[in-house]
Length: 221
Image (spheres, rainbow, N blue to C red):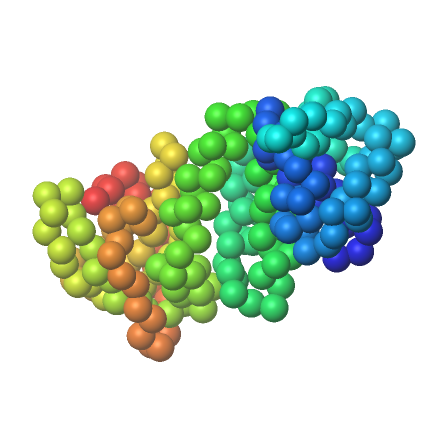
């Protein structure tokens, strides 16, 4: 991480912690630098016009009084969700650290303009950040048949082979749109009811008809 990137990171970490103060030692640990480096960075930010106050005392530290960054983002909740899902797609890859940093900045920018939307986005990230979501995202992209273990509203768990079509959100809930081979029809599966998703390696055939056009996406399990 170069100095410019670190200055952005310091601002976002202070914004994320507000209204609590953050010590130089805490910032140094999170950014893998020395406390002296953080103190120099804070001075640079203050000289650049950011209102960073020093809070004295045992639990003191630095506090970003005015909630703004070096370069504010103006994004909608939908745009933020799309970027966050993309950033969560490869949590252990070579760009994992950069992705986590970008997601942190994204959440901080959302929190500054729309706290409720930011909280909802955090819930989406938690729901979509696991192994099941990664399998489904790849299956949609590669048009690959997936085996699902799915829990119905009454608690019954079934195993189904499905041909993924897309991932959509409706009323703040994420769904997998797919052709279900068990019932030979289009179905929508709630992601929070999926217990497991396993790629089969089989390529799904092209099928006529769009579930959105037929209205079958309203038939939600």
